[in-house]
Image (cartoon, rainbow, N blue to C red; front, side, top):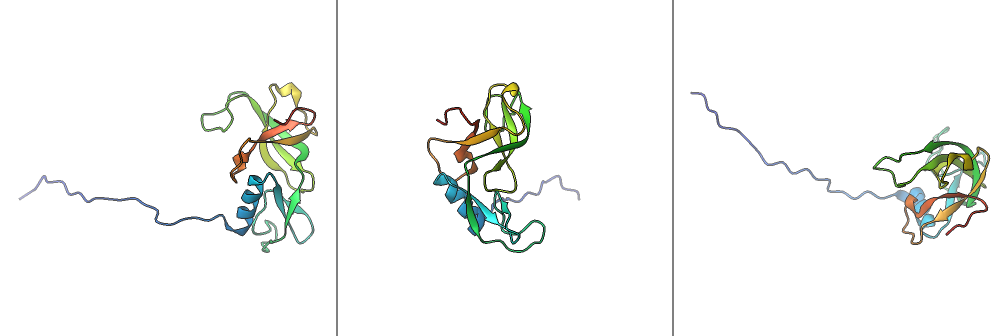
Length: 151
């Protein structure tokens, strides 16, 4: 005899663990909360920003954190006229690779200018911090061309 009874079982989807940032990313995030940007020194003396736990070329563990500058140079950039809904920025801005002073690798972040004619590759920029910081990459609101107010 055939039955049309449906079989079902409750399913609870859960992730019963807590993820930590670890010593390197944790130090980077703590630095941001304190309005300090940290990189990590590689064996050859170059500095990675943001820091990683392992050298991306040699896979050697990295541990020596160093403070880098809050100003830097725009290495390359693109213009975002209409930010997506998921974007942390709700107005047009540049997304740029910014090599901070003292770093050897660029950091991806926004440059807060109103028009793409106001930014060029090679321009110097500085961090605009959020009023309240909490230890997150969003503590950096964006970057401003040097010469503009950082408030």
